[in-house]
Structures are given as C-alpha cells and as structure tokens.
Length: 106
Image (cartoon, rainbow, N blue to C red; front, side, top):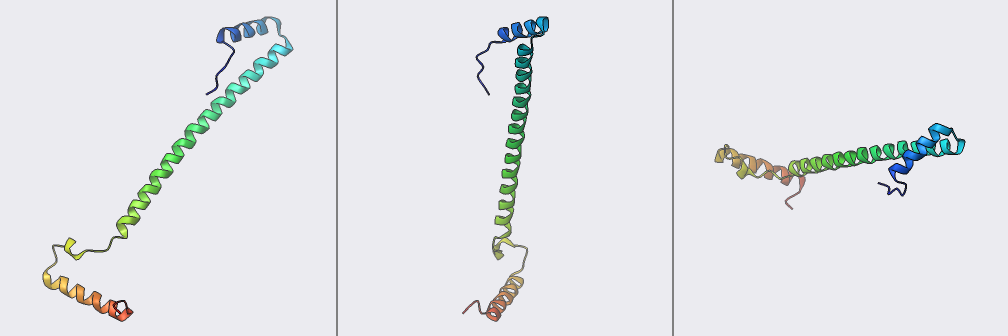
C-alpha cells in the first residue's frame, strides 16, 4: 500500500518515550499514526468490497446477456425431432399465413 520510511523499531522507541514522558507533541504524532492506520485499513476494506461488487456485477451482466442471447434465438424446427412431418408442415403453414397476414412476405 504505502512505503514507510520510519522503521518499526523507531516507532517502538517513540511509543516507549511517549509512555514515559507523556509529551504532547509525541502523543500528537502517535495519535495521528493511529488514525492513519485506521484510515488505511478502512480504505483497503473499501477496495476489497468494491472489487468484489464489480466482479459480481460483471458476472450478473454476463449471465443476463447470455440469457438474452439464448432467448432471442430463432426456433429451428429441425431442433424438434419429436414432431411428425405433418405437425411440422402444419406449423410452417400457420407461420406462413401469419407472415402473409402481417405483410412480412411481401
């Protein structure tokens, strides 16, 4: 996340000195450090949650697009082998009559 120049052992000395001498300036620095750590943790949590939400949204969009593609496929009568030739012809005749009625075959 952030590269820190202060080493952990330096912070340990600052904390030790702050605990011994209760200096206002030192306590202010330690408080600011604590607040920054809290903000960094919250920012990291927000990044993780936002990433998860984006992935979930992308997955949902893909599923909806896939469903739309499948629902928009034109019915191919050859995909229905359980129909008899007479049933298939009757359906074709009905569809042709419907297309003629709507003027789609002109």
